[in-house]
Length: 391
Ligand SMILES: [Zn+2]
Image (cartoon, rainbow, N blue to C red; front, side, top):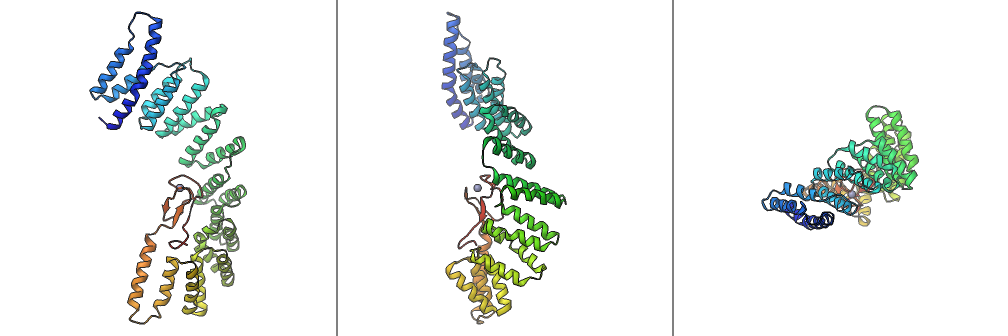
């Protein structure tokens, strides 16, 4: 027999025995002198257990529990236990059994409905879960947690329209701050519209995202991308420029596109000014590498290497080292060239192996950007890594 199941059943025994004792006492009060059927059922359950027929044993023990005001809690605890152990069909049966009792108090019925919603959710029967959680919105006791469950389901099923509606409801009627996820929902909608080729609708959603959360880096990047595609370069630069104030850590993310927008405008001076301004605000080594390319073109390899070298003394990084070595290789003595080349290859391999992003909430590492952490589901928590191995 599955070892865990055995432990679970052993844990159930005292509950079943206690319940049996109560029922037995009740029944003996009602029909003095008659034997209750409990003991035979209890022994039947035990027999199943001993004969390693665990499924039948569990079902027999469930049947032993009668529903009354005193055992509702036990039912709910059992249902929860079954769901947590992955035996969701049993949890569903138990909760449906509870709800079907006409004598159940309405508060207990709603708790059982909520638990049944969690069961459906656990097996991916989202339509049923949604209809239960929607029903529970009328109960002030369950409103907040039902809204949260609905929000989770709509995020999971990528129904961003509904997710936005629920988040707005959480904000307006429960007073919960939702501006960060809400802005992401509008960005998701914008993404969808953009993919469908409807840039106008995408821009409307992005405007909404920015009005809800003016610090939404994602909205600025997406807006910049759409303007860039529409060849509205000045507008694109304006959108990307907003990242400096919103969260400068994300600037390297948009850097190639910012470079492209300035290039299309033939505005080298503007680009250099943008890089210098960003570096003054500690935007990261990627921007310095970009600046070093301009210095290299204007003043040669040596000036570019000096720029990188000075920066690395204060803020050492593998990325900067990689650029510094490549600037030196051309000018190195023939005897030193192979060693420098080897060093360059090693640094490059190290960089390829390192994750570039980290979740500030749970520590999840990634090589690509995630606006919602795949591990802890937090929004905007995955950020570019700073320091020697990052920016
Ligand atoms: Zn996380």
